[in-house]
Amino acid sequence: MLLLKFKVRTKIMRSKPIVAVSACVKDVDGFANYAVGTKYVDALAKASGVTPLILPALGYGTHAEDVLEMCDGLYLTGSVSNVEPHHYDGEPSDEGTLHDPLRDATTLPLIRRAVENGVPVFAICRGYQEMNVAYGGTLHQKVQDVAGYMDHREDRNQEPDVYFGPAHDINLVEGGLLAEIAGTSSITVNSLHGQGVNRLAPGLEVEATAPDGLIEAFHVKDAKAFAVGVQWHPEWKVMDNTFSRALFERFGDACRQRSNQRNEK
Image (cartoon, rainbow, N blue to C red):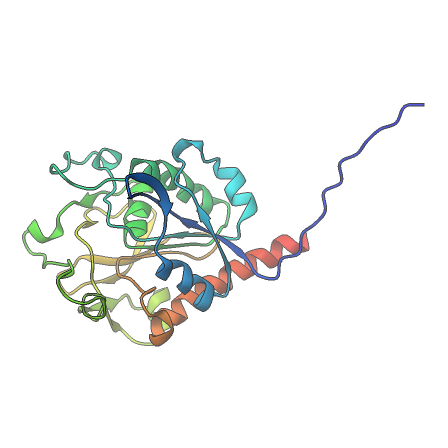
């Protein structure tokens, strides 16, 4: 008698959505480490109410479909490294500029696939810049050297509470998602970046601008779910900032909605 074996897939009901968190490659005591700042992970767990899962920067060894099948959201963190300019046909970086090619190779192919699949995406600082590049936009490598723009960098000679503190106002686009969340037309944010959006990619729409006109936030037009990028750092002391907390909560809600939809299938 022929016996047939069937593989049964058991549906896993999650208590919280799982969100993939981008990591960087960083040197620690001469050894390469996959790393992400605890403030990013803690903000996600506390304010979004999800389970963070750190995604190593394996580069092209990362299979996008496997990651997106497993996760209910994608969270792109900030970093001290810059997106390599060849990804947006930019001029070569100045000597000594810190890059992270494995992170670029991991996140850039993943972003558009995530949005297309209806996976909520929340991008901060470097992640925001990656999102613009992934959709075909370009970056200023040194905003402070571009005529008409102010210096958006932080002063690392100060204490973190100072250089992560309020830096300038941003104007929120009327009718936009951020204006809805904030309930006002402007908010004050911190500022810790050298790169910035030069040409906004097709398919992205402005959510906020700095006083000098630099684009500070955008969303993906016609996205199936939350797909927002911000240039500042809302993760810093997120629970003490009403707007930042509400922004993370909105992302968490989108991840929960996706998780619930998947549980129903």
